Length: 478
Ligand code: SAH
Image 1: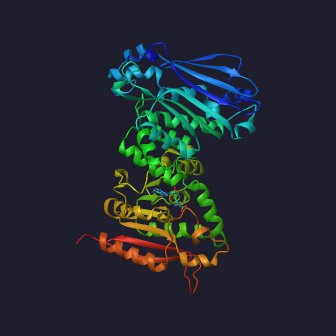
Image 2: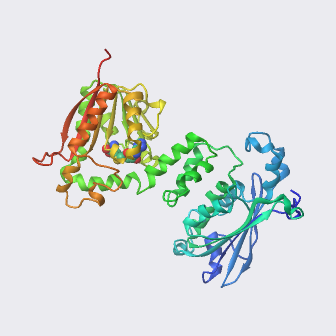
């Protein structure tokens, strides 16, 4: 890079300004005193925080990142990204906004990033006029992508593109921009958007990307990513185009956060149904049928907070019990409710909880005698239902499947059905008895099962029971 601006002494600069009054409260929000300069050692260099201006009307904090480019090159392979040897790549890192900046934000502004503020808790919750300026932001995808990422989040964007080399304009434009992003939002939101979207724009990361990145996305993205029109490309780029991670993250975002967490989903459904103790009847019936089937190794797919797992654990017949759910969050609750950590070793061995999605084929699900899928299918997108059918009945193919779903006809009997007449707004569909039974019949034909139906809860003469249960049994191979 021949441009004199990109000399080895230039570091990456992010400034954050506010005109909220008194603007100097920014110091409280960032947990960094406006009168002091502070420095932080990071694995790849140094971060410095200082305030170029600190007036009541306007206050600006600067985060200067001094990446040790020589150290980076010398680092043994593996400690940073595998393509670190690429000269071009190494050479731009010290002065561009990249995943190094995200790491610095998380380290230096960790409380502000998570929205915590001891001295001004109210202010951390308040939307204030904010402006962030990035001295050099690489945008693979250009200004168009920059706008598609930030505009849906309410930002006004000013972007100035740099030519590749000021002395040779004929070389054309570079992918580097100086960018100002303005918005009225919480500081934590601004930092979170930068934290996730900078490496997305750069389309690169300096470290190996694995499962932990999905957790980061989930943690920092759940409030805004689910509704973002570019959700898919954000997730894909953030996870360095690794297909299986991307699929997992998208499934999780979709299921975990679109509406509320499954925890609230369950709480709301239970409220609606508790008058008739429906959940209890469902689980007790499910357990009974699983017992009668003679199963020893059972799956609870979409196990939620683990109510069925608790019942299964109480039955010695079940030697291995697996709870799977798409939501990390409910799995944690299940673990707590089952007091997993305090269980005697023998019990622990019987129970396995893991995160996974019913939308994708999963080797971990093979070799089980029976599966329960209790009040789960109505949470799946119709478009994914056929994938689910094959995963369960063709690849997992347990001897017995106990599956329940609401009977939509019964909803007229609830006082306060939710939007769209479904029992909960996270439900993508609910079926009449006819619809459910013809779906089940098609399963039996296609996958070689027989089916019986069981009403769950008080049966109404006209509209039937509140919950419908189908028990599928695999035909013995002829
Ligand atoms: N079976 C439990 C929970 C029902 S609520 C019970 O009866 O108490 C529905 C559950 O399905 C939620 O925990 C939700 O996270 C889970 N779920 C939704 N979509 C899923 C998917 N694609 N894969 C696995 N679990 C899913």
